Image (tube, rainbow, N blue to C red; front, side):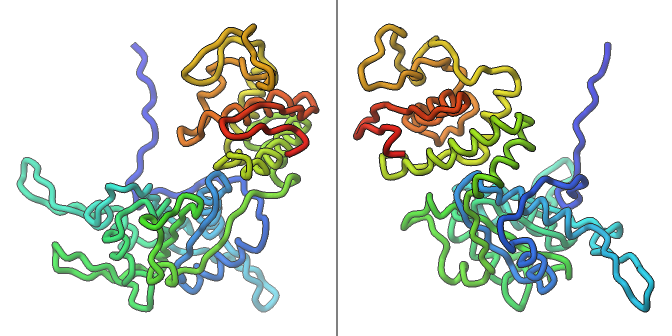
Length: 343
């Protein structure tokens, strides 16, 4: 009986990015982040989903851990970040959600066979060890939870653990990074001004078509022609926001489409079932409806759950058309009819 090799496991404060992540800079965000890290200024990343915020953090964690060649008196010497002893910068990532409590970040008492013992949370571990602590989608967390990061984001750089009656000074190499999507914010879910003004903000938007095609080609493995067409599709679909589309196709979704194409999924599939909960036969296509509305239901599996049925029809109809060098979209949504002239 063969045993399958177990997946690598790390303590959360010991995880490092070993391989260089692929990242294409769109502006001077790399230089600004490096300056903020040297000065220990907290960083806030904001932008739509799928624009590369998390990949950027991974890339910077890798880049900051690389040796620096310093020229002095005509001789080169190697110097690194010296965070973990080998130059690597640990990356602690926390996916925030509406049930996230302060104890989830700081720590809590747990019962085991030996009695009660204290367990540090991910934020506390990052503060003790150093490195980058990345709080993803910070606005999803409760407001009383985000307040605990205030002493860490000013000149004090302290973490107070009320249950232990302790105050921890952040390691010299500790940096707090948070991200959020302004498109989902509302009155109840938004950063307080007192929190927002403690960070240097970097605004992320979708890359231009040339950069996006390069990203799609590298990440999906699809050929250059299809990558260019997918990037073109993404930019056109994003122009449909004024026609009932709440959110355009992200670069991540286009990469997923490219991966399916690489695996042999045809850009255009014969009708095998309407996308969504209701089915209709291929012969029952209504006038004004998309000619590509009857493609396989399985084609929607890689879409995020937040994507609505209208978005699915737009995206996949466009995917089928764009890969044949045509964008003849013509379909009816619930509130309006959208044609290729309006894209």
